[in-house]
Every structure is written in structure tokens, then in C-alpha cells.
Amino acid sequence: MPRPRVNLLSVDLIADAAIELADSGDTFGVNALARKLGVTPSSLYNHVDGKDAIIELMRSRLGARYFPEPVTGDWDEIVTGTVRGLRRLYADHPLIVPLIVGKTITDPGVIGSYDRLATALVDAGVPDDEVLAIVAIVDAYAIGFGLDLASPDEIWQPTVPTATLGRLITDAAHGAERSDAAFEIGLEMLVASLRLRLQNRR
Amino acid sequence: MPRPRVNLLSVDLIADAAIELADSGDTFGVNALARKLGVTPSSLYNHVDGKDAIIELMRSRLGARYFPEPVTGDWDEIVTGTVRGLRRLYADHPLIVPLIVGKTITDPGVIGSYDRLATALVDAGVPDDEVLAIVAIVDAYAIGFGLDLASPDEIWQPTVPTATLGRLITDAAHGAERSDAAFEIGLEMLVASLRLRLQNRR
DNA sequence: ACCTGAACACCGTTCAAGT
DNA sequence: ACCTGAACACCGTTCAAGT
Image (cartoon, rainbow over all chains, first blue to last red):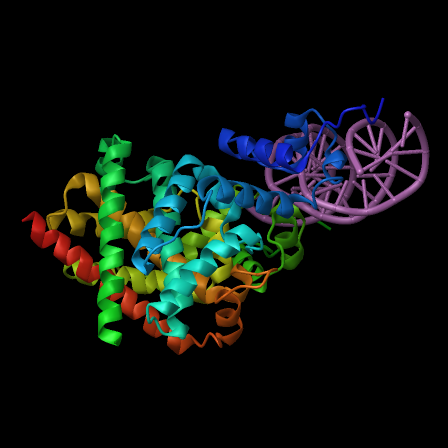
């Protein structure tokens, strides 16, 4: 019964199924993932090192998918390219954001992306002790918009009368175009602010 | 044996213990919380509606503690006041951020804070369909800096050589003052951008 | 009204046993 | 090398039983 001639699992299969499971909205977990793959939970441990490793695997796989090649160019092109990529990733897979937020990043590919961003900022003249903060801001901006795209009517759920919030939430058709426009404006603001900050430093 | 003459639990006791537990870094959960309170897990359900309700209770209690009175003033004062308050909250309790992020906000006090911010933006002339996005950005900015303050050397953990990131992480003494300065600069950038955006709309 | 203790369905993880 | 099945310690939640 055990061990069919052709393998049932692989790291890639697990990663893809994990992403699908998270996207579906069902509660994410090792057991549910095994169920989805038609396999016993313990089988997964032949390929992967537990739940956290699976989550890191999802980050890695999505990173590779949304950044098939390194973002290059001037520092501002790297910033906008990276933020736009992250935003598409989070917009397409908003439900993985709560899963990965706050978890340590180890995947070499993803580390490489942040490293190139940090290098570009250093090369552009940003003082060392501010680079990490700026990278974090850039990341937070993308995550924030990803979460916003997810479903704003689930972020705030007023149980008492409100002056403005309740009306805005019900009014918000929440079209992708409108959110896209707001995102681009915010990104321009971000880059303009960084540019200003750089000029003052030189 | 059960039911001592004086109650062992109350909503406030549970909330405070939950915050302490989360801050301690031990894995957060109903069982661990009950253990900390010297009580059976099922006892908690006489006062509180389960794990998610406890987390929302933590948000409520911390919100009341860090915003003892409503933030008032012009829209920009409300923005800066709210962001600074949120940032102090997240900086003092960084480990609750992963717990609350992405979870629906229902607490009337916290809803009220966001409602006042939204109202101020509407009054200042921000178009309805952009207010929610801006509120989300403001929130993401505070959360991002809260996470950043937590422990940056745990966010990125390079396993391969890096050009810049590894050096910055080891160099970053990560003093509170330096992070404070970066936060204030970023906040000024944020408000300046919003102000510019408002002028163009009028 | 408030707490216990038993029970339930479910976690994530380990490991011996099979091929 | 890869999968199963049993086992483990642990979840969150419900509920009858006690005072």
C-alpha cells in the first residue's frame, strides 16, 4: 500500500498546493494541506521541514514567480520595480500576507531582492543606518496595500454608529482600477520623498 | 473545590494577562493563558468568547491605554497624533502585531479612532473613494515601523553571502533614538505628501 | 454566576514499519 | 527514498456537574 512506484509528492507540488490552500480561505495547516494532496500529514515531512518551512517555501516560490529576473536600474527604478512586484504578489494572494508577516525571511532569492534594494540605496548615498528603515518602509507600503486590496469591509466592522467610516465602507465598490490609481500615487509620493531626502544629504 | 467566594477572573484580568503573555514571547494561546492565570481553560469562556475575542480584547485595552482621550485638531494633527500613538503602542508591544494584523476590528473605541481620522480627511477635502486607502496607508506605516522596532535581525536572516544586507544587519545597533528619528522623518514625509495631494485637489 | 473536569475534534511532529 | 499508521503532546471549544 505505501510507497507507489511514482512519487506522490515533491517540494514544488507541496508549495503550489499550499498557495492554493491559503488562497482558498480555508484554514491553513499541515493537516489540511495533506488532505488536499491526498496524502498523510507525516508524508510531507519527507520533503519539507514542518509548517514554518512550508510558509517560507510559499514566499520563495511566489518570489521567484513575481520576480523572474532581478530588478535592475537606478535606485528609484529598483524601488518602484520592487514595490510594484510585491504589490502584485500581495494583491493576487492577499491571504498569505497574514501568514508570512513577522516571520523570518531566509530564502536566498527573496534575501537577494532585499539585498539589491539595500545596495542600491547605499550606492545612492543613503546613510547606512537608515537603509534598513527605508527598506522596511518600502515593504510595509506594499504589504499595507496588499491587505487593503484584500477586503476592506472585513478590516473594519463597526458595531456602533460611525460618522464616516461605515458610509465609506458600504460605498466602496472597491474596484481594482481605483485602488491601482491610489497605489501609483502613493508610490510616486514615496519615491519623491526619498529623492528629496537624498538631495538634502548630499 | 470549584467556585471560590471571590472571583478568580474578570475581563480586565484576562486582557492584561493576555498582553503579558504575548509580550513574553511564549506561544500565545487559550491554554497557555489559562495556565498563566492559574485557572482551567474552560473557565475563560465564562468571561470571553474564545481566542479571537481575547485578541480583539487586547486591541481594545491597548487602544484605550494609548489613546486615553480622542485625538483632536486639524486633519494633519489627527494624522500625526494617531500615527504616533499607534507607533508607541506597537513599539511597546511588537509581538502583538502578528496577532492582530489582518483580523477584523470591531472594538467601538478603536473603530472610533479610525472614524475620527476618516472624518477629518473627508472634512479636509479628500475624496470619499480615497479616504479608506489613506487610512490603510497610515495604519500600515505605523505597523511597519512597529515591526521594524521589534527586531530587524530576525526579519532578514541571510543564509548566503550578501552585498549589503548582512553587513547592515550586524552593524545596526538598532538604538531606539535612531529609529525614532527615522520614524519622525518618515511621518513628516507622509504628511507633506498628503498636504500636497490635498492642494492639488482643491 | 463562576469554576472544574471530562470530553471532543483537531493540531503539528516523530518514528517504526513497510516497499 | 518515500509513504503509511500509530502515537504523542498539545490545541480551542463545549458542556454537564458542582457551589
